[in-house]
Length: 179
Image (tube, helix red, strand yellow):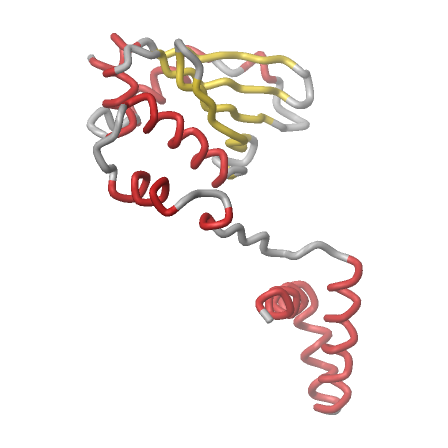
């Protein structure tokens, strides 16, 4: 039912004007057009809303740890946080940037981003300015940042440019996160 409703809402958003006139001409005709368009939409297109249920990917204990910031080992928490953040991705950050995943290594907590812009030249972005902006916006008192600092890991923001196929890392050391 949820899938049908999401297709109907997409049709109304995209073709509301046409559907309105079909209903004005005849409610039966309008309803027929809506039913036919919904069936075609469901056959030809993916679900407009890809609703993932966290219960399908995480145990109850894992969800409780994430949601309540329960006291567990820092390593376990960061591994679980990376898995949970990746589950929530992709997330559109701005017009050209999409957060695609998170991962944890021995030395760093990595947030992977994808940049795609046809008109902007990637080399014009001053990564030192981006680093300053990130440092200014990070909540250093958040549970995840405190745990990254406690494990003496770096935090890496990894940007992949789809157009130029280049990779650029912004590395925030544990010392930079502390200050």
